[in-house]
Amino acid sequence: MELLRDEYEASAYFYNPNIFPAEEYGRRLQDAERVARLKGFPLVADAWDHERWLRMTLRFKDEPEMGRRCDICYAARLDRAGRVAACRGFDLFTTVMSLSPHKNAKSLNRIGRMLGRKHGVEFLEADFKKKGGFNKSVLLSRGLDLYRQDYCGCSFSRRQPAS
Image (cartoon, rainbow, N blue to C red; front, side, top):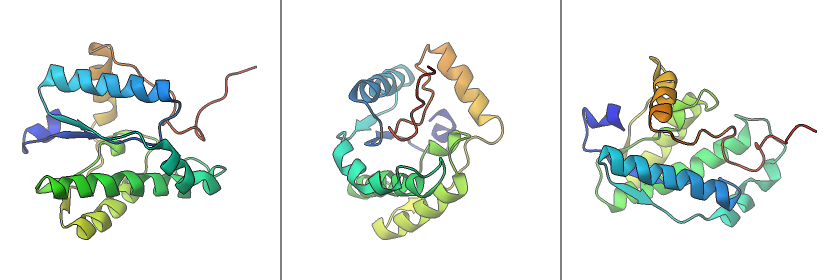
């Protein structure tokens, strides 16, 4: 957000129906709300529609990370973000998902462009992990004592505890 705020009047949008279980979702939303308050930017939090997300992705549950399931997840989340951006009269939208080294920025940008055209809102292409972006996010989250998860959030990617 701080990078975007240099050039844009930015708002954050939290739509993560993929996150499971509910406690994980709540923990991440709570930190997003805290950061928004601390950094002084608006945050719009949408409903947690995990059942819908599950219906869309269940047949791809055995796909590896960065496979078809992830593209479906990206598309669902970016579609909703594009729709919200259009409804609120925003000039453009983007995603911070590309900050993660486990997310495919090329795929995110391709899907974002397509959905931007669908909703009539420009998609700002980015790969936020570049130029040390991921490392900066780690330092920022440590400095703010934010929760750092060890999986993307979806139940299919969640690591099983060692036996």
